[in-house]
Length: 358
Figure 1 (cartoon, one colour):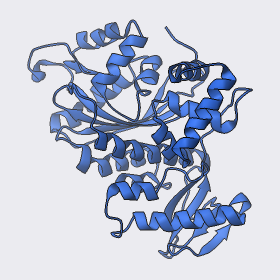
Figure 2 (cartoon, helix red, strand yellow; figure 1 turned 135 degrees about the vertical axis):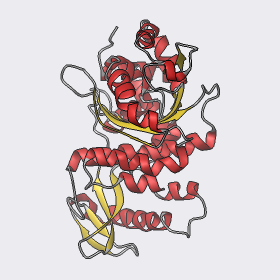
Figure 3 (cartoon, one colour; figure 1 turned 45 degrees about the horizontal axis):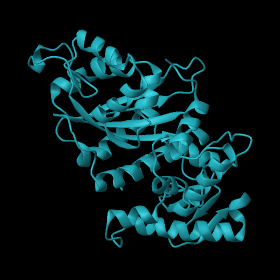
Figure 4 (spheres, one colour; figure 1 turned 120 degrees about the vertical axis):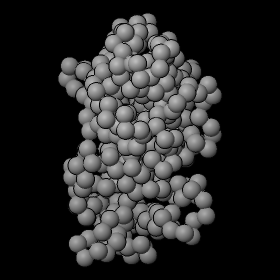
């Protein structure tokens, strides 16, 4: 849970926030080859992706000194927006080579783009190998594979954490790895959305409700003050406190107690005031949505998350609702739009979210 706890640090500047996420993830993800991370912003008016807050931790000295000149300057900023939009939409946990296979099916010129990078001196890019010479003979330091943990938000932002691997991986990430890090990604996406919504926040800023670890209500405002909602928030706060203590036996149990959202509306995280007292703070933080005329806000949110490669179970975790509710929203949305399959819903959502670039 260390990465989740680090994600809800609302006071840190964005570059230090990404650095902190990488540092917290490294003991579990770093295979000795280093981790990279960045925030991807696809909301720029001209459609050009803006990658910022790039950071790296671990790895050999040669890579640590050269990652920005190679990965950051030439891969992140050198490949077109469409590549990154597609590459980051294959679910929250995937290998670079697997994402590349999917991107190649959507973008006919993708292999040519990678070959161009190979001609500039890359030995490996997105799981592709362009030279059999020793890595030292290549101009740029790169690895043939990376495990990506992608925290994407339908509003057009992604936080990517990439762990280098020394060889291509043919099998998809294992079930436990995928389940654990998908839920980590859900929290990172929610935390980044909260950071965008309220800006750098300290202590109890813009709190809808403030609860002590034992469940005593210190403050409640707006809809969070309604008795039924406040009771839900209070119970969720107590559960989250349990998730962060030794009383929880497994990581899986901790994640079940601490969801990315609660009732599709509130993010709850802990904080300390200036006297060092600890509180659980609830802030409204549901994903932004621009529903199609025939759809409800929740139906659009569910479809948007589906288009990011999220399973029904993960969408339920993202929003803090039941899996059966997710299925119901998808079924109703498909009926309203006049579609019959999940694949058609995904295509519809992606086409609506952005123009198709060739």
